[in-house]
Structures are given as structure tokens and as C-alpha cells.
Length: 480
Picture 1 (tube, rainbow, N blue to C red):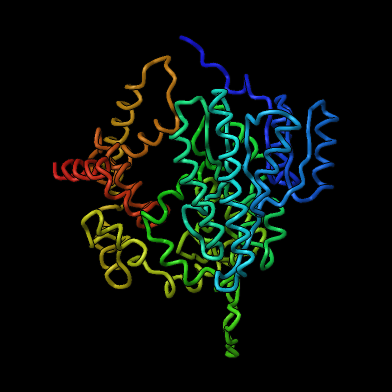
Picture 2: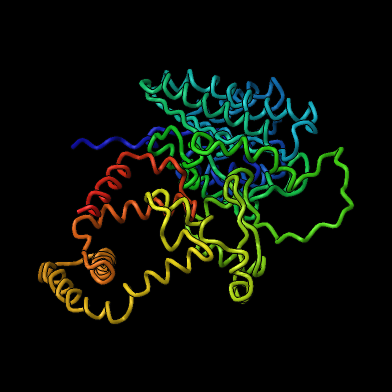
């Protein structure tokens, strides 16, 4: 098979904007390490010179161009100076930007126009300036640094999200226009990043989610991957691909928008309410809109343990438009012992799960007298004497299942033991093994639990064709 040539082979000169710190500086280091000559662009001359000296000391070639790209004539001047110093631009990294976190109504005209000019117009102008030469040479790469908020328009970042959404559609369109010319255009969309973006937003203090940000070097690696694989879009970290479907699946923005800023930024004309209010548990810091979805997906146990250590035994977690109070440690034990019967109910948590399985008379979905009556009725069927009668059947079934494992072959132990225990429980409690229906039962129960009880998955998962077929087969198996 013919091997595809490396896209880096003929790339010689890179232009990096916003190169004085953060993502821009990290990307410039990676490009220089690949042997590219780098033109560094930013407003702070001292930072640029420090980085240029570092790259030269490592054997690279670097020039600095001090410019405010929000000014209309700056992109053309930057392009001219870079090409005079190093030659034609083969790689453009459009990263320059600044942050704003606050109500749109309080944003100054200067900040709004400056953000649009820097994020959108400057990136477009530089792309237009470098593309003709790239197309003529049949090589080159343009990477725009976008953001995951381009898909969600999180409250407090209205203009910022809009400029990043512009970059998203602009990159997609130009990518398709030049695809056959040997030129690559892509966009990298990071979530929160630990950069000076958080330390110096134009308004307000720190931005929610800043402590959960990734390092700039991770974004720089993603930019390198985007060029190497000629990817049109790359999310950093990859789990943020889910934000492309957030509004479509849950309408989260309509529900979150009126409330999210009220928790972090008071309105200028807000009237303080002097009435005493009960203290609320601390809220775990998280990005606006998404909340703590990403760490809950990646490692829920680790995330909750870290939150317990940082915030104490009682804290709040925000997941998209929903908020949950978490009780952990000794307080959780004390709460369950003293107040669980009054504060917790099966019907609210498990009722939707029971209805999805087309039953309302099940132990997990009932409370109070109905729960006690059904538990009393079921007790005899699950008594020790009844279960002891079924033990020989369970042993025979277990031997048959173990005998089906190929001798000397590797067995996936987790999946195998999960199946074995499920078969044993079915035989022990129902005198019937699920047999080949186990996969369907597992699909239905896992999906319904995650959607309706744990609420980690969107409701649209219940409409999947695979889920509906598994549910139909499960009911058919139960009727037999």
C-alpha cells in the first residue's frame, strides 16, 4: 500500500498570533521543534522577545512582530513583515484573542467591537492573505483556535461565543473550498484552558471553570494533530464533542440562560434582598452551560472524591441545566439514619424507570404503606427456605456455563463473570435463566438507569432503534 507523504515535509514558515503566552507560545514551541521558522505576533514586545530567545537558543529561527490585530490595517502589515523576514507563510495559527465574562448589557461598545475585530475579522483577513500563496504552492495549513462555547452560547460569553461560532462556520466553508488544492484549513476547539484568558478578562474576576482547565500544551498538541491528520475540527479534550448536540438534545440553553449569571455576577441594577436566607452548600466550580458534565463522564468517582476533599461533606454539582446536592462522608450516614425516610422517596427517583418497563407496581417505585405491603407479599418468595430449594438448579446452571468456556482459551473475565452472576440471580430469584436474552436485558436496564435514574444520558437514548428492539425482545422473552 502506498504510504501517504507527511504533511510536514514541505512546511517551512509558520505565523502564530497571540504568541506571547498560553496556547500561542506553546504552539510556537512545538512548531519550532519540528524545524519550522516562526513569526511570533502579539502586543507585548517583552514577552515575544523572551520566547524568541528561547526558540533561538534551542536552534530555531524566530522573528517577533508587535501588533494589535484588532486594528484594521494590522493583519496586512503583519503578513508583509513576516514574509519579508522569513518568506511565504506555510502555516497560520490564528490564536489571538481576549476574554469577557459578564452580562452583554454591561459590555462596552469598545470591548464588543474589539472582540469581533480581533477574533473574527483579523482571523479572516490573515487567512485571506496567506491562502493564495498556499494554493499556488499546493501546500499549507491554516488552524483557527475556536472554543467549545461556539456550540452552546453560554450565558456571560455572548459575544465571545458568537465570534467563535463565526470561526467555526468560516473554517468549515474554507476547508471545503480549498480541499482539492493541497491546502488544509481546520479549527481546534478547546474547553477551559489555564491561560491568562482567565486571569485578565475584560470584566469581572475569574471565570467559572478556570480551575478545571487543561494546560496550553494540550491544545498545542491538538493543533499539531490537526495539521498532521488534516482534521477539519478537533475538540480538546475529545469528550467535549458532546457539546455539538447539547442544545439539540435538551434545550439546555433556554433553561440555563436566565439563571447561570445570577449565580456568579449580580446585575448592576439588582436590589439586595435583606431577608435572611438559608445558607446553601458550596457549588463546585465548573464552566457555564456544561457544568461538571465532563469530569462526571470521565471519572465520576474521582471527581466526587476530589470535590468532597475540597468542599466538605455537603456540596452542589451542576450538570447542564440541573443541579444536585451531594452528601458524603459521616454526614451522609447520619442523614440516612435520621432523615432518609422523610426526605427521600422511591417514587420520584424510580417511578420513571418503572413506567419505562411498563410497570407501576414494583418495589423500587413505591413508598410508604404500598411499599411495605408489596414487600410483605414478596417476602415469602424470597425466603431462605424457598431459595435453598433452587440452589441445586443454580449449581447445575453454573457448571453448564463454566463448561461452555473453551479449555485453554483466554476468557474476558469481567464480561464472563457479569454474565455468570446474572444467570445465577435469574435462576435463584425467578427460577428462570435469561439465557440468550441477557444482552437485551442488559441493554434495556443500563440505558433506562442512565437516562431516568442517574440522568447521565439524554432522553433521546430511549428512542434509539437498537434500544427499542432490545426492549421488545426482552418483553417477548419474559412472556415465554
